Structure formats: structure tokens, C-alpha cells
Image (cartoon, rainbow, N blue to C red; front, side, top):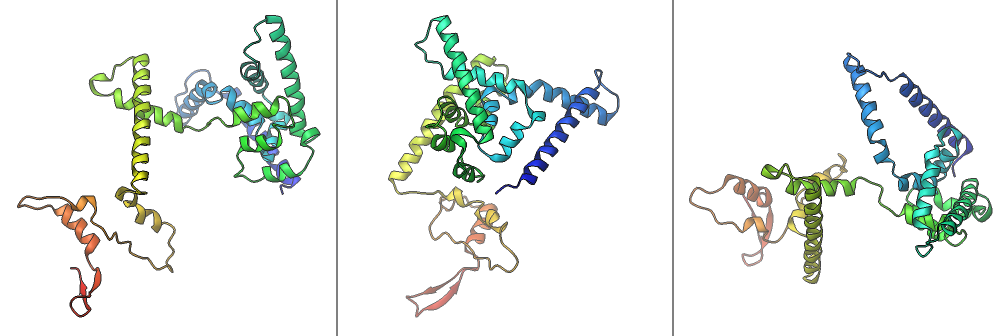
Length: 306
């Protein structure tokens, strides 16, 4: 259970941070300074101010208000942290997602939008103050767990009890908020925009990246399905860095066990010329050197690989 002192201290820290941020914004110089540290601060603030609208789209703002975690709710309720743009984002998404498409009359549409927004604000007040349909303590005990998924929580506890908030929360909080999509898109863009094709226009690059990314996704799905039908659950490459990953959690008192792959791997099926290959020899020695086994055919004698 979260204590009241913990939430108060969290809100005090957030308010202090916001006040400090506002003071930094007020003290930010209009012209570029000459000192290196002041210049770094100047351009960092300029870049953050430029990209802030892209980092805070409407669905991110609404997800912040509708997050069921008690700490985030207390942070959103704090008057210091209130942003009028969060309410405007809620209104825009309600107009976009909650108004039926068959309503085409302008007057009727505006009346329905006003009713939906008013209902949402009332339900949001009950949600943040834990009253009305959110008065029970059991949902909030579940919400204190950091592993709880927001849209699943709203599906269980607010979708049935509310008219607007539950449906909007399920749609908005289930949307991906991380940078993984942007990184995958950038990876698809780099496949085409390189070399002599480095000057491709944005529209052409976008179309080519979309087509290649969709094709790569389909090919990966086919490979996974083929491997599953063959009963192959892993590949040799999956174990390449297993030792390095596993050794991070090993203490000095733990006995390290050597992992031996008792099958012929793909990298072993190589043909060489008369000069050989030093890298292959080193890799072969790393796998088989020091390995001991008992030969059943020769009276159970112990053999050691050199």
C-alpha cells in the first residue's frame, strides 16, 4: 500500500521540478551564449521545445490522465502539474473516436460531442477521486502493482461502469507508446536511403520502407511457421551470446557449468583449402578442447580431446 506521505513527497518533488523547469525557461537566453556549458543548455532547451509536441501527442496525454497507477493519478491531480492541453487532447480524441460516424448533421454532432465531453469529465473526476463507480478499494489494490497493464485494468473495472471513460481508456492506453516502432521504421528506411539512393524524397522513401517492412514481416512469419512445423524451437545463433549473458548473474561462489552442444553445428560444415583457417581452428578448440568421454567399445577407457 502506498502511504500518504509517499504520495505527498512525490508531488512535492514534482512541483519543485516543474517550478525549476519554469524558472529555467524564463531564464533561457534569446541569443546563443558564448560559453560552452551555457551553449549546451541553450541548444538542449531549443531542441526539446521543438520536438516536445511530437513527443506528447494526444493519445500520450490522455493515457497519462487515465493511467490507473495511484502515483500517476496523484501526479495528474496536483494543480501544479495540470496542463490545459491535456484536456484539449481529451476533447479531440473524444470527437475522433467516440462520435458515431453515421452522425452527419452539424448541430446534432456538436450536441453529441458536448454531451460526451461533459460525461467524460464527470467520470474522470470520479476516477481521480475514487468515488462513484470507482469507490471500491479492490481495483486500486490491483492497480498498485506495477506489472498491471492499463487497458486490461480499464476493461475489467471501468468499461462496464462508465459510458465514455472506459471505452476511451481501452482504446488509448492499448496503443504503443514506446520508441520501438520508430526504431523499426528507421531501420526499414536505412535499407533504401543509402549510397546512390541517399537523396530519395520523403514520399518515395516512405512508400519503399512500408513495402519492404511489410514484406520482411511476412517472411519472418513464414520462417517461424516453417520452423514450428518442423519442431525446431531454436537455432544455433540463439546460443551465441548465452555464456556472456548468463555469466552476468553468476557470483564467485557459483560453479560454472560448461554448455556443450552435442550435435554438428552449421559452422562446422565447412571445407578448407590446403592453408586451413585459424579462426575455425580456434573455434573448434574452444568447443571440443578438454572434453572427456568414455568409449564403451574400448573397455570403458577415458578419452580427452586435445
